[in-house]
Length: 226
Image 1 (cartoon, helix red, strand yellow):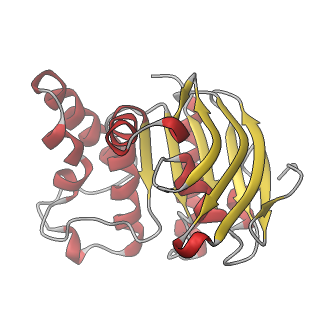
Image 2: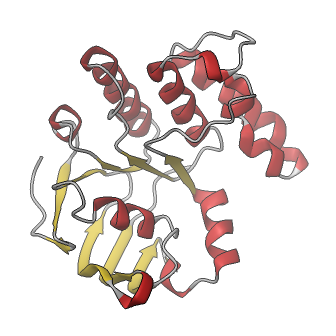
């Protein structure tokens, strides 16, 4: 799959009690572009990323991914869109501790049509090898932070998504491991033409993006270069 373009218009996100989490935001992302989202802690960066994934229930405005407006979708339609188009890399990995690296990386095969199961498992295996994760039968509860993050990336890419959304993907890694991960993530995305959007405080990661969006106090500031 190739990346999808994104057109966000007057996006707002509200939380409990009507509290505004993200004020009207508008921007465009080209298909296959790599975008960083930066700003202070608590500024609304993850809120924006999760809205783009259809994981924020109370949104207004438009989140148009290649002609499909997530802001108008039902919960079931957003879930289907994520399964079909989105690979998520969560800050806390969200791996199943009792599964192996392959069991986690190929997890989407459990919910896929029969004809897609073998390709997902094959792609997950190839991604783990490409990312340098051992084919050990150990469960991931014994893995290092770097190994766990690579498993999370393999899982996000195993169903060949059009879109990769990553939340602080290097936050728990040392500098050397973080730099390797940045190279892995951006190379995988660009070589396969994926649309990559990553929330990060990591200047090394942001420098590898095509450009950055800045969020502060729930407001999207003027887009800038990394």
